[in-house]
Amino acid sequence: MIEALENFNINEASLTLWVFRKKIEQTLPVYSARWVSISENLENELKVFINNEKLRYTEVIDYGLLAQNNEASLLKIGSDETEVDKVILCSANQTPERKVQDVKHLNNCDFYAVKLVHGNDTLYCIKKPMLHGKLKKRKD
Image (tube, rainbow, N blue to C red; front, side, top):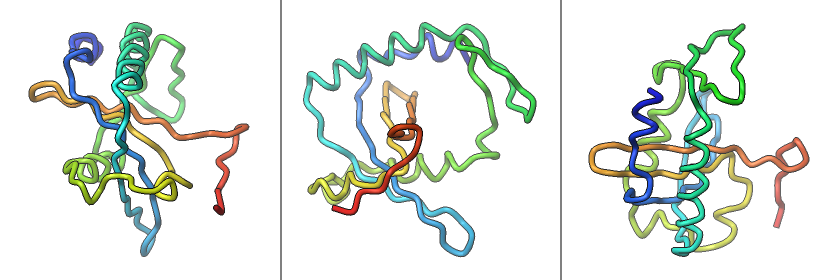
């Protein structure tokens, strides 16, 4: 896993920024996503940041209730134990109707993802927005 991350060509990958919202319907999470048009400068800055981050990791630890990782390790969990398949499905089609057209589309997102694609490989970098240690909801 570390080797695949190290070998992923971020500089030549196409990059898309996605904003996700989640709602619960009948106790199951349902995701919706929109992609954001970004400048070439921001794209380059994101690639530099991601390249620097990937160099920090040197080991992979299997996720468990008592697993403890450090700043140089990644926790590994099977996709069958997460909702990642729904995230991938939501961001599969970058169509014009799914593009952010209004700032309201960005408000109250649950998380965002940078999707990088190079050849047959895809890398998702997911981050939950946090403000002062607590997620805040915007009303306007």
